[in-house]
Each structure stands twice: as structure tokens, then as C-alpha cells.
Length: 364
Ligand SMILES: NC(=O)c1ccc[n+]([C@@H]2O[C@H](COP(=O)([O-])OP(=O)(O)OC[C@H]3O[C@@H](n4cnc5c(N)ncnc54)[C@H](O)[C@@H]3O)[C@@H](O)[C@H]2O)c1
Ligand SMILES: O=C(O)C(=O)C[C@@H](O)[C@H](O)[C@H](O)COP(=O)(O)O
Ligand SMILES: [Zn+2]
Image (tube, rainbow, N blue to C red):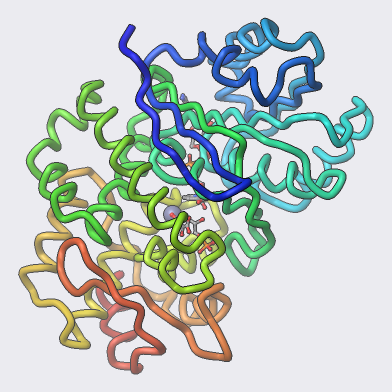
């Protein structure tokens, strides 16, 4: 077994390590011992992930604590709701969990965001650990401490910044992830190339076959590079105050609107932001920030990853309405993160109607 790689997230008293490698679920006891030894553990997972990995995780953690419970919710985006939080808080108080209990999020981004928020709210905040199992969660959502749930009107509208104590990424679990969800995770990987790492973008372009074949070396490399990119951004602007962290939102203004307008079921997050990035690049083109060459190259990489780049016409008004509820709206002005070249983006305050129309036309 090769040594796990680590990425540090230096955030003063909220600092933590991300461990990346093969066979790490078996090593969970050792990796998590500093945070869970002899403490009560509440593993939160979804039914699909639990069916594959819960017994293994429970048994690995039993080596460091004898007190633990597992709570399993339905799989899918609709579990990222206040109703599910309430249900989990009720179950935790009955266990009973207390302020020294530790939540372990075992699953994709839905479970990480949900369980993180459950931990942030329970007894005014208890420790939590991320064990991300989808590609999307391994490259993005498990890092950085954004936790929360959706409202029907707006994605991720209720939440908290709550950093995990550690993140353990076992690449072996990707074996059981279905193809559609694997490709959805690639949308966030491509995003990191587009917003801040042109070499990563070129690497993805030239390695798509190996990536889609899930060759461990390239997958480990992508996870490591994305986690490092995210750690760098989060370290600079943990709570999205200076604006630096907002670059991670490229494609998300339209992407989140698509997810909400279609009822959080039709499009996976990665699919919605793939369409969102294509549309927002058209907006940047309408503003003279990028040219056709950029837009074509970006669209081609999403197509080669098997990701959607359009959604049906007819929902433009609902999409605009949903965008007005984006968390990047400040003092009534909606900010978009738009590309200037591969590897760089800028924040643009309320582009004109023509640019927004160009973006929505590109969606359909
Ligand atoms: N907090 C953040 O910074 C951040 C960043 C990006 C995305 N997100 C959020 O993440 C969510 C999307 O995450 P996701 O795409 O992981 O969705 P998800 O958690 O629903 O997982 C996708 C599907 O894959 C299954 N699955 C997960 N791991 C598996 C495995 N190893 N084997 C078999 N099946 C597995 C799940 O059961 C689910 O059906 C969205 O809600 C999005 O808003 C948050
Ligand atoms: O971590 C961040 O910051 C991001 O923006 C990462 C995004 O990929 C992610 O989808 C995030 O949940 C979106 O955040 P939001 O603040 O727009 O809800
Ligand atoms: Zn995202």
C-alpha cells in the first residue's frame, strides 16, 4: 500500500489535514484517533453508501471507540433539507448524543453538507469528520467548511461555515460510484482548471480517456490538485468575505438556478454547473471578456467528459427569478464569476440584460 498524500488546510485553530490514498477506510482508526478516541461517534450516511461501506467504517472506528451509532437517510439531493436535519437532530437527542459526540459524514456532497450542518447546529456545534465517497465530494465539497441545506426556492440557502476536524479520502470507494455521478464530479474538477490552474485544465484535456477509465494514478493526482487549489482559496478567504472564495462559484449562479427550478432532482449538481459554466462563458463573451476559441474549448471538454451543456428552453423567467436569490446578491446587485482566460476568472457586478440573455440562450 502506498503512503497517503496529505494536503493541509491552515486555518489557525480550525486547521486540518486532508488524507488522500488507497485503503484508507481500513486505516480510519489511526487517522481519526486524535479526534474520536473514546468519544461517542454518530456516523451519518445515505442508504446507498451505507450498503457498501457502513460496516467497514463502523468496524474500523471500533478500534478507537466502543461508543457509536449510525443514522442513515435516503440518498439524493432531496435529503439536503431542513426536514432531514430536524429528523437527525431528533434521533441524535434520543441516542443520546451530547456536545462531546463527533459526527462522521460518510457519503457524497449531500451527506457532507447535511451532516456538517447537523454537527454545526447540534448543541451549538460539535466536531465532525468528512469521509467523502463521491468524486465530487472528494475533489470539492468535503473541503472548506461550507455546510447547509436547500430551500425549495434557493440552493444551499440555510447553512453555516463549519470546518471538519479532518478529511479522509479513500479513492477505492470510487469503484462503486455509477458513471453518471462520476462524470458529474468531473465538472468540479474541470472548474478548478478553468478558474485557477490552466496546467490542470490541459492535463484533463489530454488525459480524458484515463480519467474516464478511472485509472488510480490520474484520479489521485486530480483529487490532490483540486484539494490543494481549494485549500489555497479557503485559506485566503475562509468565509467568502474578501471575494476570493467566490471564484469557486463559477457556473454556479446559473447552475444553482437550474437545480432549484427543476426541483433538485432532474439535474445533478455537477451537470447543472456544467451547463452553468457554458452559459456563463457566453455571458463573458457578450461582455468581450473571452472569445469563441475559449467558449468552444470549454464546451468541448464538458462534452468529452459526457456532461450536458444545455437544458430545454422555456424556463428563462424562472431561472432569472431563481438567480435573484443567489447568495452572491449584495445590496440588490447580482455578482457573476466570469472567465477571462483558461485559469482565470473575475467578479462582474450585474452584467447588462443582453449578456444575461446571451447566457440563457446558450443554456437551451
Ligand atoms: N460544501 C461544498 O463546498 C460543496 C461543493 C460542491 C458541491 N456541494 C454539494 O454537494 C452535493 C452534490 O454531491 P454529490 O454529487 O456527491 O451528490 P450525492 O451526495 O447525492 O452523491 C451522489 C450519488 O452517489 C452515491 N454515492 C456516493 N458515493 C458512492 C460510492 N462510493 N459508491 C456508490 N454510490 C455512491 C450517493 O448515494 C448518491 O446517490 C450538492 O448538494 C452540492 O450542492 C457542496
Ligand atoms: O466552497 C465553495 O466556496 C464553493 O463555492 C464550492 C462550490 O462547488 C459548491 O457548490 C458550494 O456549495 C457553492 O456554495 P454557495 O455558497 O454558492 O452555496
Ligand atoms: Zn459546486
